[in-house]
Image (cartoon, rainbow, N blue to C red; front, top):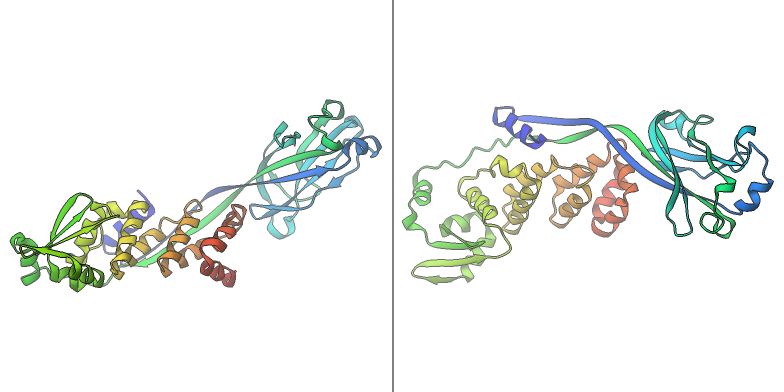
Length: 357
């Protein structure tokens, strides 16, 4: 059962306001390329146990660097390249748990001679993990590995993080449902009195004009322009699934949210939200917004922010910004080119993020 479904069940049981959070492990991967210019000459002249350091790079909220010994890090490994991954931000970010792999990039940019670093705890310089005998000088192919006399090393780092994601607190609606008695109940159940027929997704839905017009100004406009035959107004809606329209119709008649099974699926909740926005059913739109807040994760974040931007979903936007504020989430989002996505599709969300961070 999804978190959204659990929260919905608790509210149905009478808990008026429910919040939730999720704890777990997340892995964030990043890569760094180290180019050693003039390696062919360097390997012949640099002294054994001479250390060279790469620039720092960030993965998983920690800074890293590569400590490279072009002629080995001890007398025993003279004639080898020794290379180690080190955490460079221990004083600021504490110890890190990570694994990685080291490869030589050939002239076509393809990894070769790959060595793996098993998952370890990194505690900053001078401690590091890597390969004391990464590659022997005489095993390097001049044409394949030493293009223009340069050696290029690829380091892939995967950092394991403990994280806590907050699910947006959503209060249960205090508004009572419509009282389905009298004229409204009679209109609903006496099918002979319908005066509108709406075709959606190949299905026909009978309805009552006064209900549709009272609930949606868009329906009021569309019905005024629709054709009428035998006292029945005919309307056709394209680009909408029948099951989505059924949820809209149910809401307009009963003020009841979509069924829980529908809201458990983020894709269905999004479709209902789009339709609610189209017909200006603001309360239904808000219900779907709050539901989608419970489905936010790293894989859906960019698309959810874009959706919120396009359809002016302030609650959903706020939930996304709050998710990004959790430790490690912003770094992972930046590493996945998320900022570029925000610049192109969600400029107002980028501004909110800048203000809050």
